[in-house]
Amino acid sequence: GAVVSQHPSRVICKSGTSVKIECRSLDFQATTMFWYRQFPKKSLMLMATSNEGSKATYEQGVEKDKFLINHASLTLSTLTVTSAHPEDSSFYICSALRGPGETQYFGPGTRLLVL
Amino acid sequence: SQQGEEDPQALSIQEGENATMNCSYKTSINNLQWYRQNSGRGLVHLILIRSNEREKHSGRLRVTLDTSKKSSSLLITASRAADTASYFCATDAASGGYNKLIFGAGTRLAVHP
Image (spheres, rainbow over the protein chains, first blue to last red):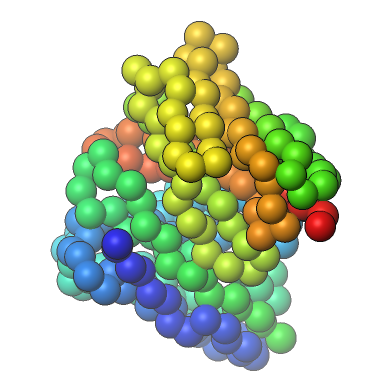
């Protein structure tokens, strides 16, 4: 099966600091990766679509400068939450797509708590 | 933006009973997928049904799709306590070739021993 990992699984940081979350496809090359955000007992909200070697496409209402996405290789995408604030506390989940029309494979998520 | 609406929001049943969850969506789709999420964990893909399919089975799961009503249902038969989780439908809103998934609000299923 296709495996996607995320690191770290949990992170606690102080307000004003930046946090980087990694998403890796372990056994396949991902043409596209997606970043989602999930609040407690809520659904997943798509934040951005990331393609290797090009700029990410952000959903309406998501601040590009706040949530920096880098997709440097076909197996790695990173999400950096810059100048984090308590309202950025959430569960961040990535997914990876092997090819158009294929199933998205989801990472286990990263729980971010900003104090 | 959210496309899917799911009902019920929460469902509580006894082991052995069947659980039915419904999902409605608004726009045309290429396919609809169902995912499961245990509390605080990632998503597990359950089943994908394409827009030209009406029904699909996988083990104890049965998914139906009615494109005329823009709705889908997930049936879990002979439920087990281990089926306790949140279940989400997601529609493939293919846009610009990126195959974006738009998730429904989810149904929280509790199966009691």
